Image 1: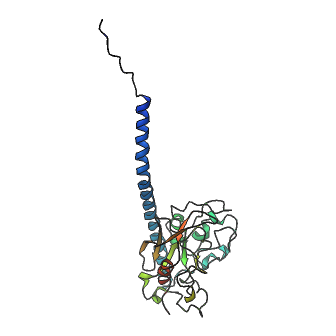
Image 2 (image 1 turned 135 degrees about the vertical axis):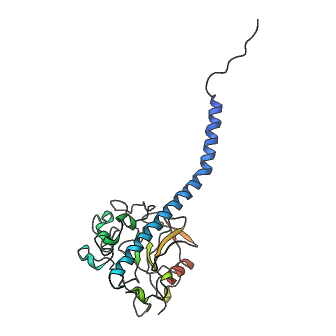
Image 3 (image 1 turned 180 degrees about the horizontal axis):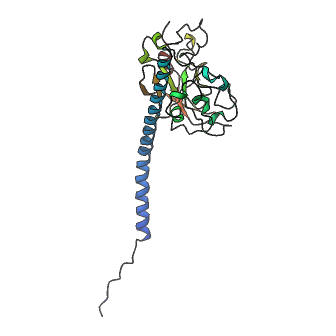
Length: 266
């Protein structure tokens, strides 16, 4: 009697399936970090594009007003929106905050730059998806304006006699002076990005706001000449309060770099 070989059942055996699953898991582990970096890079590119559009709105405004740049009024009330580029505050409990501000695009679209803006989306970074404790949603604005751009000196003109710019013609090197910056979620409140130029605070963030660092340790800046760039910081730290785990630049050379591009020597 001739014995026929046992036929192989249809499908895969359990061992074969486990091997395939293991291989997929290994490949996923190798690809996910690369995909994460690619996503961050794409979001950084979009953030730069938004900043470019915002910088253009800023330029169109001072082009219409005899070179006078948009006022940086800080926590100015929305009822006085014709006197600032962005009104009130976003962060709960901060100066100028009113319930619902964090999702209210009227705080900038009804102000000086609103009619020049393509849409409300250019005021926000696509990677800025954190929710601040007590907020009703993600902030509709990620950027703030350099306080030395038609804002006010910090701490005072006596201690920091650097120029506060009212017109672009006052700027010696507009290519090296930023106007807009993506601000840290734990720092952003009104539209005023405050940098203290008192020499005793060189190399520190004392009495100053903080930039964000969401794009592989980089921040988007818009400069007075119209160009935009992502600046990569030397040393990062991780926030441990409020919105925890967010990257932002440390002091030292990073603070020095920013202050050199905030205002010019007197």
